[in-house]
Length: 100
Image 1: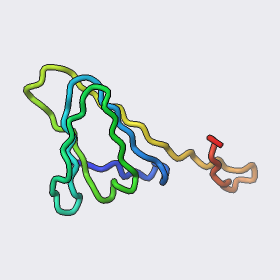
Image 2 (image 1 turned 30 degrees about the vertical axis):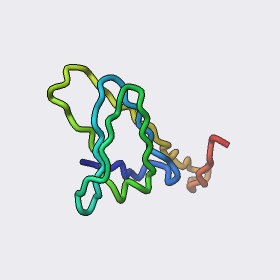
Image 3 (image 1 turned 90 degrees about the vertical axis):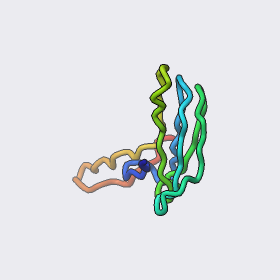
Image 4 (image 1 turned 45 degrees about the vertical axis):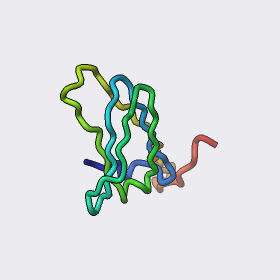
């Protein structure tokens, strides 16, 4: 089990995972008690979305199916904080949103 609580992820970013190939089971648990909150079968093309905030409350895991003979892969997307470039005088500038 793990969480994707990373400092490099933008605070407002969702964490989006696309499942490709064989069906796999995603388990979501309470990070404190370990109690299973949800089990989801992720089929080919399934999209799951978790907020960055949820990473401090829940952990998740893709369960390995040793009987499955087919390949499965998960591709994860998130917004990464851009490095703050230094100004010409050596001071650090304000981060800008490059998407707007």
